[in-house]
Image (cartoon, rainbow, N blue to C red; front, side, top):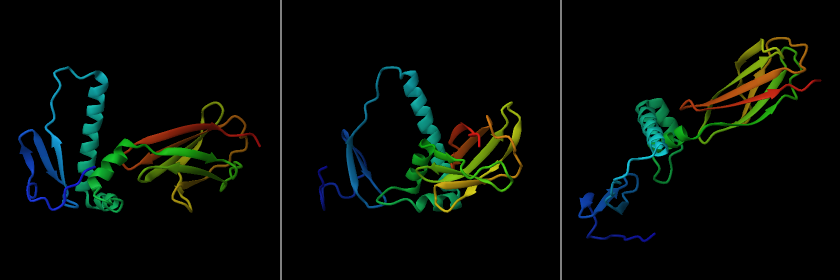
Length: 191
């Protein structure tokens, strides 16, 4: 990308000049120039309308996230190189957490046995919910996992004795700050 440094012709410019728009980035005072956008005469497709709605919801989330001082501090802590807390919040809105692994090696069905879940997110995972069901769909137990030793690991500790594990199902749901989710269901292996 071409750069013009200490250009007296563009210094202080902002807004529209002819067919060009001048924008100044506040974080580092750089000036960006682009052509004036030309609107299309065609009616947007349904996919385009959906993308616009999702982007609009992302903007609303970003504004509300930086309006909350505590949330703004969290997003600002990841803002570097001219990227604002607002931009980080919008990016977080568009990216769901990903459940990478459900490790049931430590789960025997006994109270106190554990399930370790590895979850990643572009910003942060806010919570992980675990539900264990019998083969017939009846609930054995459910609850929240707690953060483990690493940033990606979450640990669920059993609170109910569960003697027959064969055919039972575990459902894990991970949440991030904007409320995006990922969910996985696994059958508990027989022991």
